Structure formats: structure tokens, C-alpha cells
Picture 1 (spheres, one colour):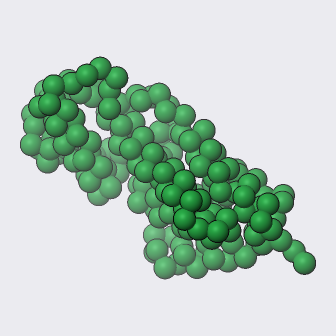
Picture 2 (cartoon, helix red, strand yellow):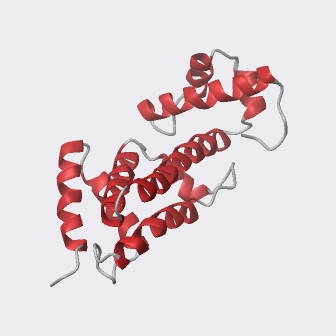
Length: 181
């Protein structure tokens, strides 16, 4: 949400626009119709442009929200599960996130426009929060790096649109992360 304080109706419009954008981008990808987003939010195009002067600003708000929720899952998993299980649970969330992304993440990682979010820093912090304890517990090889995890998850998400197949590929990948006897 923008830094300035908003009136209740403006905040509601902002939230409706982001919610509608999440749905439309999930269906159509990052080049989704801005008019369709405004229509689904129940506002006019002028309201959309007052809150988001560019497509990239709207996409950044959508992506920041999705990425923030994904990173929060890392923290929750770390608190609720043993280290190795927490990492696996979050990696499954990361693959699912990337599969429903429809190119939004790649676009935001390239532009870094709009919300000023450092996507890589957020992902690195979330993955590190889980990787280091998993390594210390002996659940993951010591030579595995955060970038390895993020790139493997992204590769799996790109390899197949089938969630069951992606889960199988992730399971096979996770077997390779276990320490060797």
C-alpha cells in the first residue's frame, strides 16, 4: 500500500484493484487488460490510474503482495515444523507460487519498478531462514546454496504446467539435497 494515508474509500478502491489484478493476472498473465481489472474491481479506469499510474506499478503491487505472502509462509513453516520439513514445505509453496505466476515474477525481477521491492532479497532471506537450520540439522547437504533452491524451484515450475508432475520433479530434486552417507 502506498506510504501516504488514504481515506477509507480510497483504501477500499486500492484493495479492490489489487484483488482484481491478482485474479486477472492469474488468468491472463502480466499483459492482462487494465480495463478488465478496473471493471472487476468495480471502479473506473481513472481510479485505477490514480492509484497505479503505470501497468508496472500495478503489477509491482500484485507481485509484492504475492511475494510477501510466500515469504511469510517460510517464517510460519520454520516455526511450526522441524527444519528439514519446513524447508520442503516452503519449497513446495515456492514451486506452486512460480507455477501460478504466469510470467509476472520474471517481469518484476527484470524491471524492479513500482513498489521498489527487491524480489531477490526477499526470496533469499526467506530461503536462508529455512536452509541454514535444515543444514545444521543434517537434513540438507552443506554445499547447497540459496540460489540453488530458488533456481531449482523456478526450473521445475517452468518444466511443466501439471502440479502432480511438478511435485514429482520436486521430490526427485529434494532427494538430491540430502547429505550423502
